[in-house]
Length: 289
Image 1: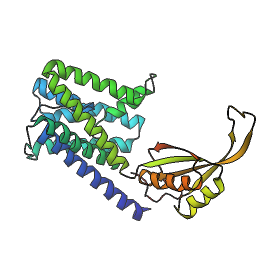
Image 2 (image 1 turned 180 degrees about the vertical axis):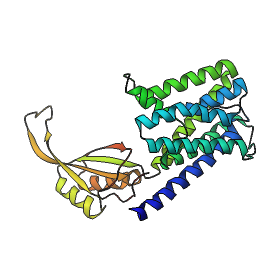
Image 3 (image 1 turned 90 degrees about the horizontal axis):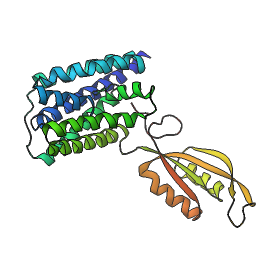
Image 4 (image 1 turned 135 degrees about the vertical axis):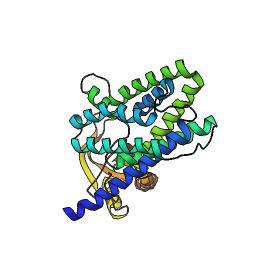
């Protein structure tokens, strides 16, 4: 167990440190010099920095502490300790590393500031911690009210951007919304990657041949549900048993799978769904961090 835990610890630490450097780069080289914002705790910290001219390195640490404490109770203590250490290192990077200002072009700042911020936060998440505690707050609040975590985060960010629009101008708030959107999409890309998993369900009268081709040609594991097909308007009482095939593939393989199934049965019914996390079985890709 000790031999296997050391590489994982090293990998997590590397992801976290690289993520911290990216976040500090996004903040000091793009967002802070141009008075732009992000969402979440980072956005709150940037807003306080602009309104009261306090040191961002102290604000970003202090603002995250309540959410780190929440994380200790609602996630686990290991997550809280790693997050606290990561936020401290981020504060030190903001305080001491001499990042240069890259550009003053608002469009470039909003896009690439968001991209580098998203890369940093995403890598930190893959390392097992968080550089922004807003999702911990959403998790805590979501257990007490009927809103989803996404709705809570959206509501908090709306408040941040409204305050920014009132105090710093609507154009700055609008560009900052673009920054947040870019960052959130980049985070998803970094966490899930190009090989985000997709669940595929296939209902076909040629299910036996479909099953064989999926396993033998694509090398995929399959699960079979027993069902019935038919029930058409003109023949509602007519149905026949069918094997409903379910498999998990990467989204890069979806087109190949569709082509394979439709060659067997052009009338096959196929639908897909995104899977955020998958491990084990016959999956080709290693488990996510």
